[in-house]
Image (cartoon, rainbow, N blue to C red; front, side, top):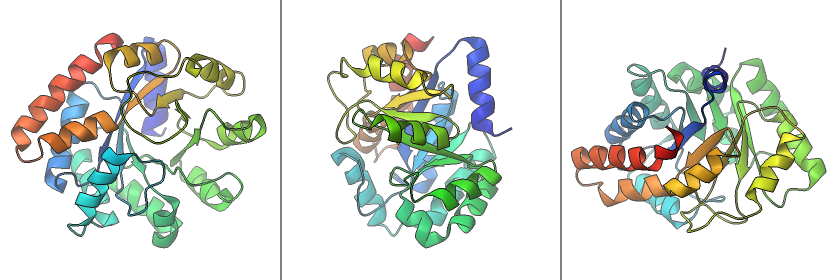
Length: 265
């Protein structure tokens, strides 16, 4: 069984909600990214998203855009994401997801990407710009390899398209909490609970909420309605603040995650 599916099955049996942090591969360095992922796993992360830096942001807000720019300026390549995953896998069994633009997958070659990702220990991918209409070949290939392809639904997604998306999504369904780009927010929308409830009527797959989640009160709210909580920009921002001191960075990250996930314990 794919590590992602096994993790959600175990969490459901324990009555727990998944904590899923996002980090940018290579920020501030590849070595430090390995330490960050391991620290997150030790601090309670159930799955970890590895963002593959890309020059043309999709739904990425300024925090993640800045991280991408910094990493790419040092000549980062897709293969370094695989190297990071491989080194993490030597020391941890935490499920890993690549968050990657379809432009990268297409140029790399879908079969080659999935093959090399799996060999490195990556269990699936979130591909924000892959559509159900155009992604048939990619989705079929990934399904045949038991490589999860997590798809996104937004508050503005039309019902028919929403059903098609959740039907093809594997691993879990990524519920985008807000209209707009990633980034920490003061408040999550009041309509979020209704959105998740609507998704429950069309799928029994795990539903995880991301975009804007940055505070313990956000985590508590999402944990009450969904199967997983995704936190990205708040973690990427903290990494940027302590990039010059890797040891302090890991300590601050552990402290932040412990506080953030208190409602899940």
